[in-house]
Image 1 (cartoon, rainbow, N blue to C red):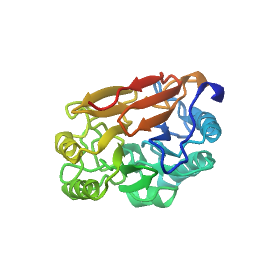
Image 2 (cartoon, helix red, strand yellow):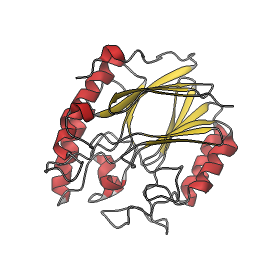
Image 3 (spheres, rainbow, N blue to C red):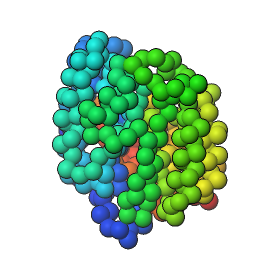
Length: 278
């Protein structure tokens, strides 16, 4: 196992701190089945176990999984078994945990079924922690603004509906805190298969607020980074991709009020320092 001693970061745990520390993982895709291409579904149990052990040692202020927590089951009952098994490992974190909805999470389930069978709160919401504000977004919608529901979608067509955009704008308007957003699909690449197709409209909301420091996302298993109009867009590589704990993928991320970000990567995620705003 990669040693915790190499992390060099701890949670802020102080309301007056100018930084916050978050544990992040993405695209667990747990399923009790043989691998397909580079997706080693069964190995996600051991990878999440290692991840949570390290998070409990580091004690970040909270953790978040960025969607595709489970892979598609042949039936609702089978996928419930997948969710129960991986949730058991994720729930071993001794602090606050959050969940982002991914397209695979609703390949057999409805959103309500997923949320009611794990520790998720809602499909999108916001919360404060210390001097920071956080938003969990949901891009699992069709072009007609209907919910992804039990596989009724093309995963390359993903949108954030008008009602959620209005909620986001109002939410950002009512906070005075610097803000970080979490989403499954990419908000920085509307032309690619992994991007939210109406990303430009959503980015305008983030930019107009003047409060958003960074967006953390998953879905694109290779990972990516871009900076658009002074906002960081960081895509975590997929935990499911590759065999063995050396191919695990999770990160402990420090975020500062000036917009600088320090990423301490585990497994195949490399350390990275993102510069402040300006």
